[in-house]
Length: 96
Image 1 (cartoon, rainbow, N blue to C red):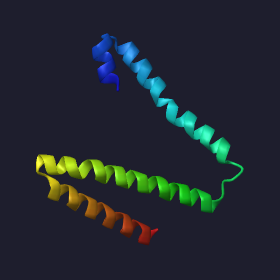
Image 2 (tube, rainbow, N blue to C red):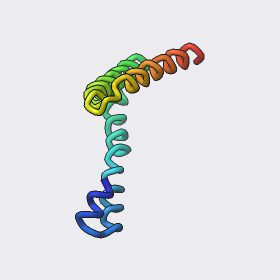
Image 3 (tube, rainbow, N blue to C red):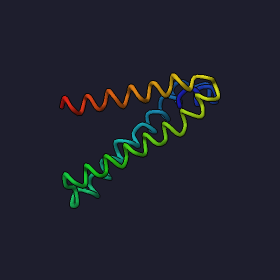
Image 4 (cartoon, helix red, strand yellow):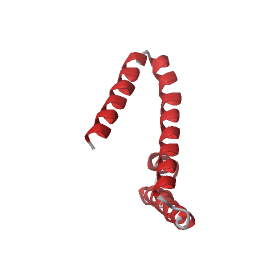
């Protein structure tokens, strides 16, 4: 985010400030979400929310990365990476 702002304005200070302000959105959103969900928060709800978000992240990464990998001819490498990543996570869950 900083690089386009820097090239548009020519100011490192503005690029840093805008990037820093944009970075504040995540922790502020997390605090607001926590305060809203606090009365309803239980281990079950937290597990369901984390599973839902993980599913979204997996879908988006596969939906975006696989077509791009096919375009550049590295589809087998990406699929191997997905398989190894899933296997690593499965082993990690067994250990923990």
